[in-house]
Length: 363
Image (tube, rainbow, N blue to C red; front, top):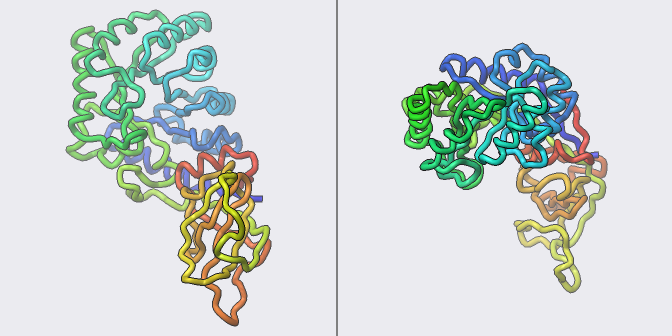
């Protein structure tokens, strides 16, 4: 069975190192755990760590993940990190202490449900800064706040923005300064306090402590850096974080010397796709079938540790790899039952954690 190995100690070490770094720069943060798909055993280990008592909150885009977090550690503060769907309002108020919002109608519904549950629900108003994902238009921010800040069961605790997720818009000093200025404007106009100014995700992390980060930006929502040790700002390792946190392995379930070209009339019936192979003019090469498919992960998001093998093709539940050039007189270095090993990217981990056909092993 295909397996995802999870190096929990390295991830927990990353979380502690990020927390120490951000604490030095007076920046709070939310640990985004959506990549875990609510994995109970992992979350139980993670939420038992002392660092959880120091960070601002645990965030997820799925109610199921927040529910697991609350069931494991009822005292942990939870954040729903996308605008709630109307049919999830009851669950959001029940399992999330805070949510990110950009719709008046949604906040109105959250207020009514919070009243029914006898709670105060906290919200961060998201502002559109060019990424064209969620966010109130900048020219509407003051009017939007004016409409929602008097709801009796809603506490507006801050402003935020999303950058780098949809179109890849990078956080810049100008973008984040605009966010900080809206905080100042609202606080002055309404004689209020907005303690949280959330300047984005792991993509913003490399700006912390530098002149390019306005001082008013005091909160980040971090997932990739904690779980993979990298920032999507440049795709590189961030400071002293560990990148060796996940490894994907799949069993070879068939290994044969086969033609490098398909035989027969090609049709559009394929449910998968093939790769562009460099076969050095060879007509036959060893091909290995691995026990995972498109239902589990996109092969583009996993990198073979053995750099001699090439992706050949994938279907819903099987993936084919070319094992390299055949050298006369030498046998294949792999056999049926051997394991192919891969380094997964962030989206690969998210897919693999969500697949019930992939075993998860905590190390």
